[in-house]
Length: 214
Ligand SMILES: C[S@@+](CC[C@H](N)C(=O)[O-])C[C@H]1O[C@@H](n2cnc3c(N)ncnc32)[C@H](O)[C@@H]1O
Image (tube, rainbow, N blue to C red; front, side, top):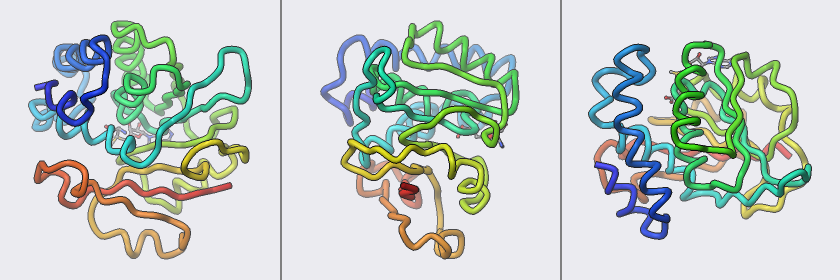
């Protein structure tokens, strides 16, 4: 099942492939205790959660974070739940710093366990609300948390100005369906269609919304 990741990202290392392959068992075990992935979706973990999270890779290449330097890339995942999109992205970009936050402590407990099992040293976690998170980030990633106006109000002040990416610093939100109404107050939002990237019918309506904030 995890081979689908290798098919789409043939350049990943054996170590990354091994990390992706372990997600299936880890989430199956944790989901039996705490519902972090909807039960109907757990069989589709690699397409609907892992590959979907990696849709963000089709839009941006996160740069390395330099140890002990403030200038390195930092990515915040708001409302990460069981770790999506943050965990697949952290596997894909092992030299970029990711901070995963969720308002529900038991979900963060699952994320902590997955991070430890995979040895992901580039991930920190926080049990708390996005509005209260400290620090500044280059990108805020998210999926299935709230509408764009509320989301922007939560994270607007958490994006830092300097950017060294192919894309301006801001929000990268995985969304589905018709976004015309939701994005009408955000003329700078760019929409990237995931059906152009992944062939599975699941992606037919799925998009990455990039909203530059600095
Ligand atoms: C539907 S789940 C999505 C989880 C994950 N992003 C995914 O796509 O699988 C929404 C998550 O957002 C979290 N959440 C909602 N509002 C939040 C806030 N203000 N700060 C942090 N987390 C929040 C909830 O606790 C929940 O775990």
